[in-house]
Length: 96
Image (cartoon, rainbow, N blue to C red):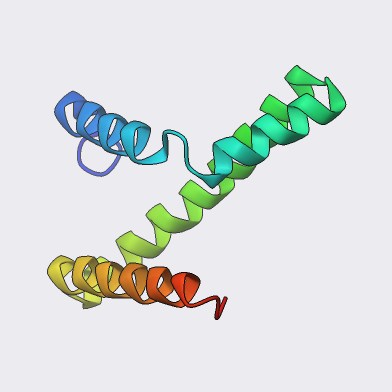
């Protein structure tokens, strides 16, 4: 099968690299470290974290594919950037 399901290694490694470096030392890893340190259940914490991240990723990829049919990718990117900035400012002001 070509098209949507064919593997493009350049896109795979670009996606992997972008997400890997964006996610390093973020709150997700801190939560995982905290739960692992508290419970000592390393495999269980890893499995729960991996399962949650797979679901979140699937939702975001499917939403992006659906939105990409109707909205320009640039609009999605700029909207995400603006929301990221707004959330950051609200966090700095202790509003959320």
